[in-house]
Length: 406
Image (cartoon, rainbow, N blue to C red; front, side, top):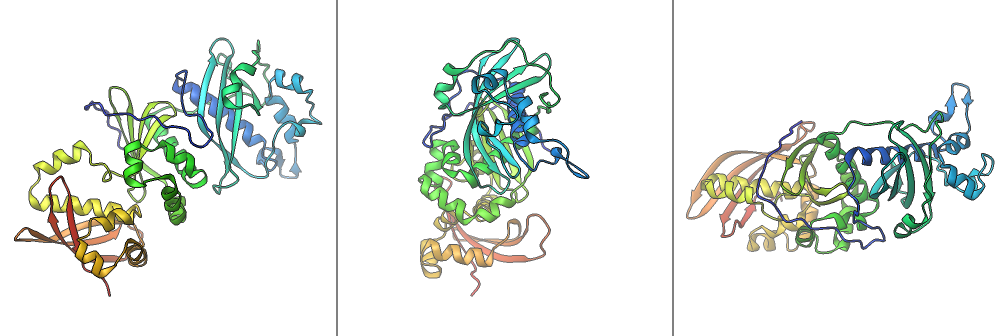
């Protein structure tokens, strides 16, 4: 894993806005360990809400009823208020038939003393990126003992704080101790990657709100185009897995750059915990780092840098961007429109590629570069040999063409 911390010029931070019924603003800043405690407690509660959790079964069948464990996890206030017993608990809590996961969207600390109190809102979904619902919880944590109690809430998020009753202590039971997890840059990056991937597949209208404002307009235009992009590429996205990361600390935020196994980018700029923006590439909005490197490069390296961008577009299945940098005469004659170009690329370039360069020539401002495209993971032996013909334009722009298979 690559772990780098440095200081660079401060960048602009945009705050996501709610257009899907879920609040994004954080009114009280959390410590990272608090975030982990709360999410781990909620996930434990959801795990035990699964009727088919292996914890309930032994070699000879069911050894303990899920109601008994769930009853232990509920707060005394919630039990008394609703007259809950082990026998009637199913009238008050939701159970599941399969493994479900919690994707936090909003967590706020209400109190941090002997018994800390948190309210949380997020998405609960199954492992197949379906059966999605918005859930809210009140979580009580005793930091000295790592014990927790929980309350599912039907209140609107903005009303939850006014309905909370404090508690004096949390009685230790068999299952209500929080499992702590390690906090480091790799785990943070991995968590953001996994949760954002899940939001893209199951709640794209929410995922869209996390994009940098300038980026999402330039890359997708609107949420409907983003949803179409997700739908077209759903099977690819399901396969994406966290592979490596880089973290950079700036004055007001931390940047986590993640790469999946196909070297697709996921760039998270974190202002605070759960307050972050996302970019999925480095070409839609050209970075200052790219401009500096580009300006210092000779013509051959500029051509290779532009081809790298084009290959990244193909790997991202961003066929609109890849189509738009093609020479207008070439793309009109060979493809006609972006839909035909996309169909051609999906059929003839179905993998994710890395580029190797060989012969390079220059004549009257036109540059020719031979490219060998191979599977970025090295698992597929298929190779594509193409020749790119490029012209460099002002403002870091270019146009290109390439040999088309008939």
